[in-house]
Image (tube, rainbow, N blue to C red; front, side, top):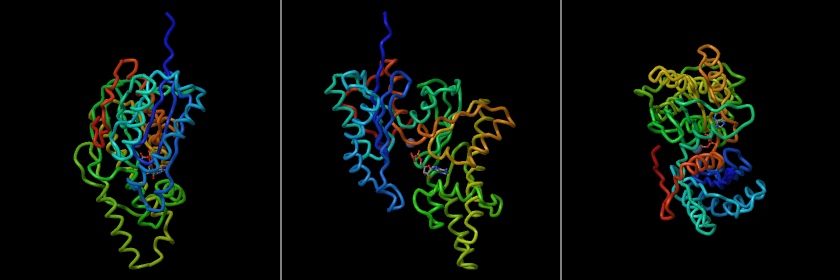
Length: 340
Ligand code: KG4
Ligand code: ZN
């Protein structure tokens, strides 16, 4: 019997990116992401504006994904969508759209956990890249999440540690805001950091037990530090921006690497998969490269397009669940808090 060709249309709308992708098996044919710019002027994502923008973007984004993949919707095998976690108003747009489309096309519906998708993005077929081998440790670091997960198999995962408050991307963005940089400031901190001295200033490391993280105290310590220094010199930030950014970045890198090393020690697993928008950070990449060289651990980072929020990662989970015939009822609803 000839093997069935599986085409998955995937939809992601959990935060401020409206995205649709078409996959043939584990290969991405298209991955369209419409990033909402409206939030920049508010210094963070405004939930109500995000859901309105998804509402406007969803039809054109899905249409574009089908056109770019050169696939007619009648060829689709299933519709995968992000059920959660995320902003309820945002999730509802993608969920309702996916449910209606699956009903209209009479194809199965597949719900996807966004965090699982960040991890399984490593299994998207990419030329010259080998996926991680099980079991491995996945660290997802972005504006919305900070998690270390033990991955035993495709759909068998256990959260070992996560942030108790802010995500690491928020630590970058909120620090940037204190320095007067525009949102999202993470990439700007990275840029200035490359010109500065990472040991110019020291910030206290949060004391959090086990493999959990906390960044809210870190942000407060930067606030107090800047208040103190500005009292002595009102131009402190502009005169020392590179050194401040380098020191902030260095501290965050140390926090992440410390927990990662603890996780390796605890599990004995030396295969690491990193994902999420913050994995673009040059300091984090350098530290990981060094660990790879010194300790012989294997580090996997997917293409940046699959690190930030995107529908291709939803599609790969959709494909794996399709193989397991793990389909959802059309009565399913979005879930803002959705554990792995
Ligand atoms: O994955 P992502 O695009 O969206 C979600 O939050 O889900 O991640 C965006 C986050 C933002 O906080 C942004 O500042 C941060 O990733 N980011 C960076 C860098 N590039 C993006 N943070 C530090 N250095 C970077 N180079
Ligand atoms: Zn995400």
